Length: 326
Ligand SMILES: NC(=O)c1ccc[n+]([C@@H]2O[C@H](COP(=O)([O-])OP(=O)(O)OC[C@H]3O[C@@H](n4cnc5c(N)ncnc54)[C@H](OP(=O)(O)O)[C@@H]3O)[C@@H](O)[C@H]2O)c1
Image (tube, rainbow, N blue to C red):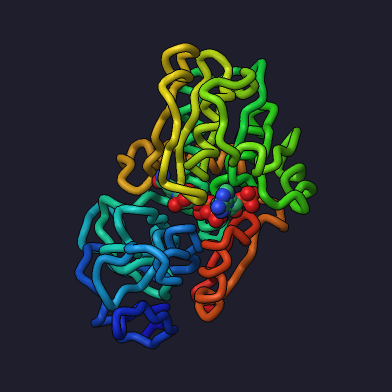
């Protein structure tokens, strides 16, 4: 038997409860894993709090990522005792996810834990950290400008916190945009050089504004992303990661055709394996100690329904790792 957070649909509503399940209930898959940690991402918040159509079938174990140890494998690439990470590929949406003590998966979805790290570190990064690393990669490939500030929106959230820490570690001058001004000390502890009030970016902007940003990582979308594009310096690139504010993009073509600004989409869910492995290696090299203490909350399975509401409301600071043994 193992414990899991299970989502059921009752009378059209999603209900979340911690249940004890038989291992025979696990879906088919090549690899069976003893999960050590999962994490709470924005998408998990939407799924558990019944705020978006994330879950494709019920009952569902949520959790878009997990890290643990292989117990059994029918694929020669993995053997019992291997320590592995899974993020994305539809787990926690179409396939049972990580908020459980056991999980089953396909070998093609797994990444080996980078040397010198452990499962708690991996989930301290999780899907959010992987996404931030991919965004930094994309900006570097597009030509990050070192003569200007690099903006991170939704900076105190999961993707934002890791993005601030990575860019600062790489020597960039990071401007952190937040709606929670009281978190300035936290954002500075991650390496932010300046703080931008979320409201400044959220207001509808002119098609072009003063050229301030040498690049940006955006988790917010909507008028915020439009303002970021309008405020980009010539040839700067913006990585669009999320929609915490809105899925709309009310912009014009002006930043693109008059300043050569590039907008790059980031998708960590179905990202090919070699790109993931590279990103995980780089995350381990750049942030071997993860986020600082104030950036990490550890919770158990029972805490998740409450924390799911909090992440959807934009109230989580940094990352939440789920100790599934709790
Ligand atoms: N593309 C991908 O593959 C991928 C992967 C992972 C996540 N995502 C997306 O990235 C986004 C962030 O995910 P996350 O896990 O980092 O979530 P998170 O921890 O909740 O961070 C989101 C942050 O956005 C800000 N925010 C929240 N509501 C807002 C609003 N109404 N207007 C403006 N800012 C708002 C808050 O930061 P402040 O308080 O600092 O302002 C919040 O902490 C989500 O939309 C998620 O779906 C995409």
